[in-house]
Image (cartoon, rainbow, N blue to C red):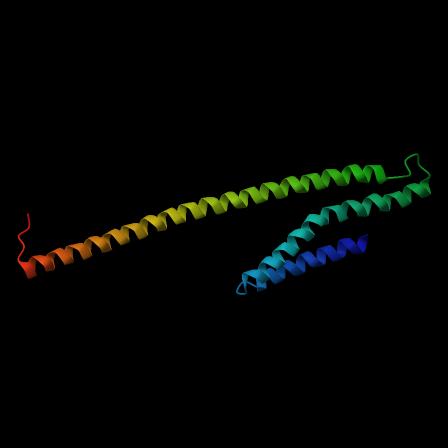
Length: 143
């Protein structure tokens, strides 16, 4: 159990360092490291709960207390922590999606109208050139 916590801490540190180093690499590689880091961070609280829960059980066996088994407490605590992790992840995903929606819709709308304006300006200037050339060549009198 102690080794699980130590290895999880080492992996979290390693992945954070690796993500910083990969600032100029491909998005695919960065995404894999971020997902690995995210999954380790999600399981880390369970490892933290597991360590004291079952370590205390050995002490309670030796002391011969009325509460020898910590498994029911561990199950309740672990389920609560997992539920809190799921709620937190759902909120983070919703916040990320809302952020993506707001930035993409604002930017795309602006880009769309800028391109439309450019297109109309180009079309109007071309039409003006055509009509001016037609007037010169055919000596059309504008109405």
